[in-house]
Length: 208
Length: 208
DNA sequence: TAACATAAGTTAGCGCTCATAACATTCCAA
DNA sequence: TTGGAATGTTATGAGCGCTAACTTATGTTA
Image 1: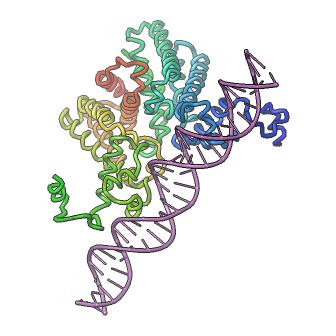
Image 2: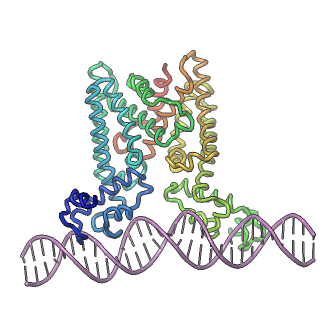
Image 3: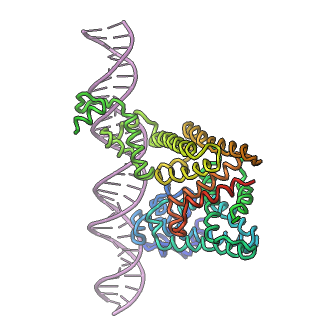
């Protein structure tokens, strides 16, 4: 078992080599998994080190600090989100009402499935927000929403400003995602059906 | 100066008395202020102890652990929020569209002014969510929204389920508050006018 | 009034974190 | 072949939450 694991990791006969090979990537992968599982607040770089089999000082040869690791994780998470979102749109119909609803649902679904990552992506963490990779990936993600709304407006002769409408839709699904994963609905309105709420509210919010 | 402070705190000639008087309340007040200022993640019980002038072990005579202090803080913050919300409704008109819009704006305003508290109140923190005081205070807060919607529906002959509509409105303003304080709007749509967005969206979401 | 139980403080210490400094090893290129 | 540069190591510091064991003050009861 441990033998096949060794082979899978590409180490032909790697008995405790001093240099890891690609420690940076290994630490990012381990950290990504740990954050996705336990959340950023319960993630320690030290754990990632143990997983990668190196000392707790090793990361500092590759990263500025703990926050730089989180930065990279967030950027990757945005990529994953963008992919899933586009897949949903493509399936439901580009530039259609159903497509836009599907995007909203995909947003919430991502938030539920990747709770811990979602919180890190959108939560307040000053250092992360300024990071180049985070800003550009986040912006790209949002642009695709505006695009879908623009096509829909065009098709259906709606007059509104696509960006303004996109912000409105984003606001709603983000609220839904947040209240859902933070279990605020559960306390106050456990019976709420999110999927239905989104399909109900989307056309209302698209109105001019 | 220090003399008048002593008198104000009720200590007639209190030079370093071994027993504090009301350490529990003093720690809660100090902690509330620190959390409001720095956020729960950057708050240490140790800091609150220094502020209160006691050892770092002292709190454990009064609280189960750090989380119990946060629990109490959240409960108090909900009270403050409920007060401000009701004040806004009363001023704008009970059971009117303006009243409902005012509540939404008050929600966002509270979130902005008390960012750190807001995050603690609605963020994911399993131990806190289950706490009795938090659940009951949160529920009471939400009930007042349902009430306003119900009156409005009655008056204007709207057919919808008040709770369902209240959830929809809450979802929207919560999304707005979150994206605003976490600076996600700032990255992607810095020009957005939240006040206007809320007054635009509220009537749309009230529709059946 | 004296004695004592208990409440409410203290110090010391464990185990964990992030981060830095100083040292060791390995790799690669001149 | 050899000397940096890159990439590991160990040791350490400062801060955190929390517990154990001890001390001091308080207030009730005999």
